[in-house]
Image 1: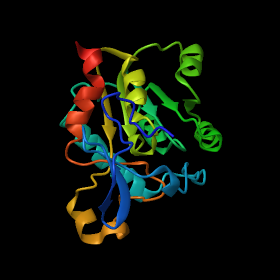
Image 2: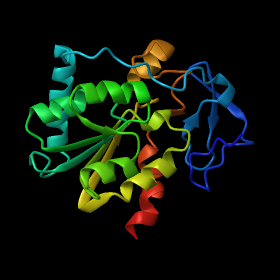
Image 3: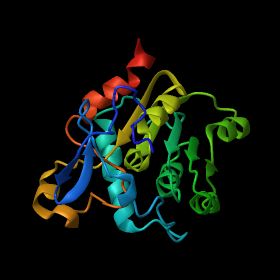
Image 4: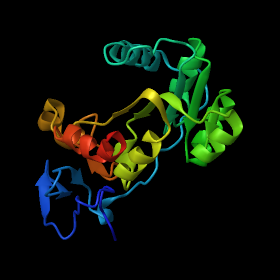
Length: 221
């Protein structure tokens, strides 16, 4: 079974296993990202959330996320921006954006039950980019986000390269992953709020920026 991230220079087998916070891991000798051995993967999906009002705590977290975005991306406050949220789950974040006047919010969610929940919220959520383009007529996006999605993907490099091709000129793609080397993980280990051993496939560290540069380099030459 192949366990590469999608970059040909990043083979993980037959690399020996390493231990990290008492977990079994494979470490890439090239990019030093960690991957769970395939036989340790217990859950390959995230259970859907109940459809209902967005909890107050989640709204606060979304608000903080928007403040954080303000320091990174110019023009994201433009309500006409074409925004694609990949792995949007049950659609809470897209509903939050739509409620604040963003007119062109589109989601991609391959999990059938979670996508159905998102559509019950009145959102444009699709199983694939081909379906999204066919229905919305949008071929390029100004902003593409993947919030805690990459760590669940068997070959994240290929997925990021694919979605980066749908960026408009001067568009931005932003993804967020847990930091396996965070102080919280170091202190609490498997009880930390971020690592999910058995469901997360990848465990990223401080070298993820260099890995991302390699992933997207072919698209920026």
